[in-house]
Each structure stands twice: as structure tokens, then as C-alpha cells.
Amino acid sequence: MNGEIHPHDTVALLEDTPATHFESGQPLLLRRGQVGTVVMTYDGSAVEVEFSGRDGRAYALLPIPAQRLMVLREVPELAAA
Image 1 (cartoon, rainbow, N blue to C red):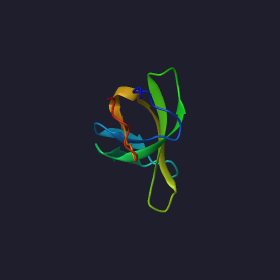
Image 2 (image 1 turned 90 degrees about the vertical axis):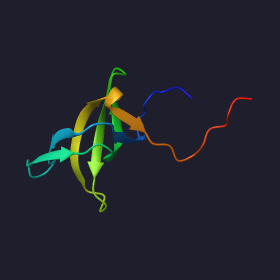
Image 3 (image 1 turned 30 degrees about the horizontal axis):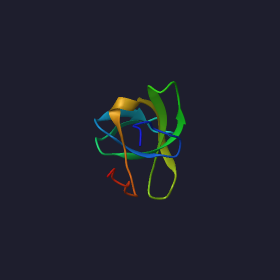
């Protein structure tokens, strides 16, 4: 498995990140560990991530450098023998 980030990956922030609320325009602080979904990848160095509440409504959408994200995995990989 390579370390690439793909659309629809679930990711977590590795550091606090300022943002703006998607609808209200209010400033937000997305904390380290905040979980979002990748909606678009750029040249491999950044991705567009959507952050939403438990109700599924997006509250922030912003480009984030790939090195500031960790992909969250739900299924283990087979180990090489």
C-alpha cells in the first residue's frame, strides 16, 4: 500500500487548522484529530477535505497539504511474509 491519499478517504488532521464555517462565514478552529472526507486531490501535495457534523451537513471545506493529514483505515492489510 502506498501512502497516497485518494478521493473518499477518511482523514484526520495532524495539527490544529483555522477554517471558516461553510454557511455562516464564522471563523472556526479545526483541532488536531478532527475527521473529514477527501473530496478532491490536487497535484499530490494537497487535497480538498470536507468536514461535517454528525447530521451529515458540511461545516467546512478547505484545501490541506497532504503532509498535515493521516488516512484512517478500517480494514487491515495483509502483512508480507
